View 1 (cartoon, rainbow, N blue to C red):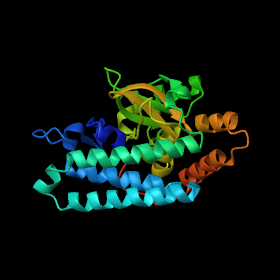
View 2 (cartoon, rainbow, N blue to C red; view 1 turned 45 degrees about the vertical axis):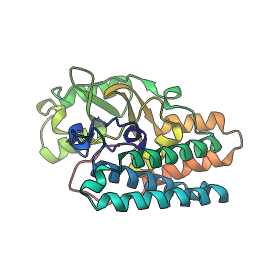
View 3 (cartoon, rainbow, N blue to C red; view 1 turned 135 degrees about the vertical axis):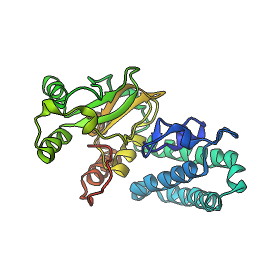
View 4 (cartoon, helix red, strand yellow; view 1 turned 90 degrees about the vertical axis):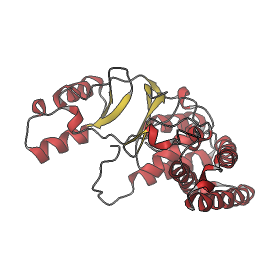
Length: 270
């Protein structure tokens, strides 16, 4: 789960980062994000801007170039490591605050500034890591969905499972779904958002990570889920001739659907 600039700017780490615990993100002595966490977040902010750069007005493009120069400069200083990184916590918050404000303005111009809570589906049916794949498939069948979030006993998200994951597990292992548990097939690197993140933010996250569904969390606990289809329905009802919002959705779908090379590690399933 990649940390968002928003979470890091507040000094609130996400549940995990590329499979590591939240403790890897924070320096316990200073209470600020680690240098690597800040570098990852800065890269993520820049990647998301590039996905929609050609939707920006000339004035917005100029403004973004100024912000990106600050991001690049800060990243360069962070990569030097050592004590210099420890002293950059406040600067990091200032720079990411500026970037967040820029994205708010862009989302407003695209009519995508509404918070995710306005379109998310509340707490979806979930399963536990110990459930069988057969049980997860039954949930998908009964609820007419293609994905099931995986939570622990405290309703904290620990993974996500798709119908494709179940099919691939059955095919590659040659075992019945009753004989395999959810933990053996679920993706554990999950990209999430908060209910207050903008719809535009989530659209950029989907495009960047090539995912179609994003769990919505509050302090690590699952409270809902938002899909590319949910965003499409929002745009269809709000667009009313505003081609910029429709184009933003088209670009998101194109990025999500682009062919990507196979990777050895597991990523959040679609």
